[in-house]
Image (cartoon, rainbow, N blue to C red; front, side, top):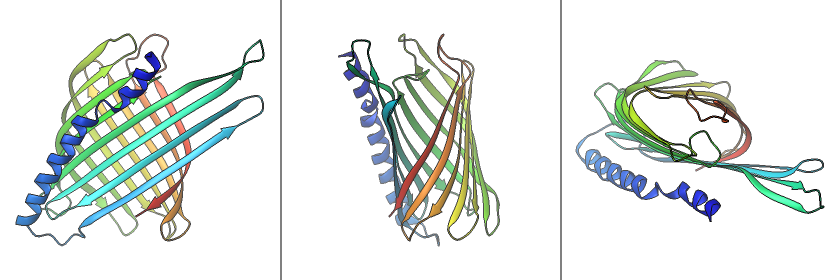
Length: 262
């Protein structure tokens, strides 16, 4: 029962997140009716999936997936993401029986609405995210923030965006210990179009609070296979400065996935 409840807890945030998305959608439609903008409007979405199966001395299966959606309206620019990572290992007991156990189970979702200012790239944003990590230092972690974002520089092949603002976080640990408090959240995204078929992306976010400081960095290289299909190699690092005894401060994840854009 404990494992079932832990697994289902990953979806406990969906009603609240759904309300945020509905509210954002209503606001953006209203804003779009009253303003004009030359930016290309509409949705751009990508879905990625990767799986690794091992055999021999170590048997197991790991699956990772992500959905990334961006909505451009005349006055708003909205981003939505959902990702999941699951790992199951098989071991052989002394009596010869095969034991199957889950060693990783993580779900993450976020939504960000950016209100476009007079300057083309400037935004006022509202951001919300929730992470459910069954085996992590924090089993549940929620962040909300507001602030200002802008494009710091842009060339034909490179761009750098940054944002900063105040926020609030709430984290739950294994032993039902809860932390919460105000934070300063900063984030940056660097993009480099290496060639027509290859691009590099680096993201970094830092949430600075009195009890904990969480940083997340991801480096990815994407190569185009055809018009809609790409292959992506990524390396992600997450660090928390305050973790329970027996937990590591830093988690890493290396992935190779296929990405389909539509």
